[in-house]
Image (cartoon, rainbow over the protein chains, first blue to last red):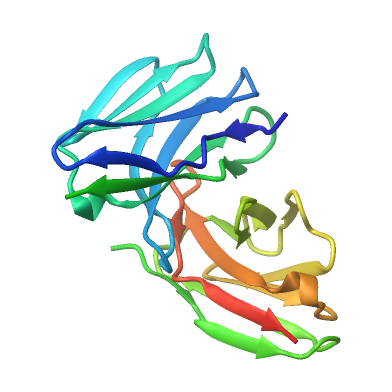
Length: 112
Length: 112
């Protein structure tokens, strides 16, 4: 079992719709969770982080964390073509130093 | 803004060569990381460092070594480059008391 799992996609949504990206993780003791956006040919950039159960909103982005289910998601409201990118889920596992483990990413395509 | 700079954007090396990839950050971050990114495999951690002269193996350290003689600089060394080390290499840094990693622009290494 992979430590951080994401559906590779592509996930296609029409412009203006809500895009829902999902991620599960294996380490129940994980404490920190991140969403990175990566445009083709570019390096990842952090868009959201969440540490506590529940929802965290930042503009059009909402991160949701459910530690009991070991599940973290990213919702993008009013999706725009400029949101088309690969979204990487990242988790800091319990124990040891701050080693960030990434999922393989979900490719999102927003169709105009 | 945090700036993480990698010495080369593109690099072509021959099999058996010793290769140095350099990374410099300008925000006095304690933690620095080297990842490689391959299609379908996502970002995989090679090595990380949490302080000067300190290093920890990541998930795929074989064939690589690192050096951190100064806080701002973290070098990845391929002792004898092989074709299976052709990849995108990403350097990242983060402060000790915060988990969020900031990435450099990446180095696309091709070993022929």
